[in-house]
Length: 355
Image (cartoon, rainbow, N blue to C red; front, side, top):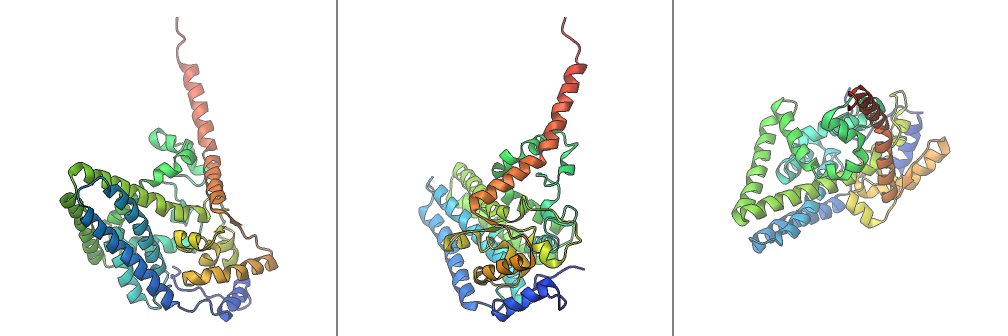
């Protein structure tokens, strides 16, 4: 059964039920309309301001600065789409989906329906080797068993995936678009026609603006810088959350499944804004429908309760979270490096000796 993005409910008496009563008693599941009006207004102004500056500046290499600004803006739009998918902004499904498709499909060129399905499965079973699509063996490998037997380019990436992690993030925005198109073609997305139209409008508008305002060389440079930085920033908002954390068996209860696989990132208001509140990943996974500004208030309640029931609660700095993720990637790739080295030794021994 698929778990929806709405706040979770459990049976009375479970560890999570006790915590949930504390959180609801503190009023932290209540909507924050003023916050989201302000946040949506700021993000909208950033988007309009970025494209207005693009038109005003015209054909100039200074547009690469605009590309960097719009990369930040696109990520903030995507983070808003994330909150919409979890119904943090609107209580009901219809306005959440309308705003989500406008932000995702039309705003940044990513299928809202495809991403929401993928993200729901991630929330249901975070870091589960078989059930979480975010740790499925694709370009990067998150489970040791999947690292073995890879050859060619995939094998090279697996052996060096820690060093290649951030460079590969430059391709994330393109991967999101490709995955969106594939999901629309195979019919797994609801409102397939509407989503396709919105993606086409985004692509036509985006490419037309580049080709009309810029020279061909400037247009290529703008596209590369914008999409690469968008991918890096977006990837960096999600990378600290689960990478390098334990992989569950599926037998854990809801509280432990969500807390033990997640990592919080310490920081002030700037960290909250830069990561869109995802730095409170533990609280977000326990209460996905909780409005972003309430996550900071929920954090000490959740941490104290975890200590009370003996559940490990991971919280670290942003830099340390990246280091832990990279160390885990390097560790997972170790068997692949050993396998490659052994194969090379066998190949050298089988080569005829030079006379």
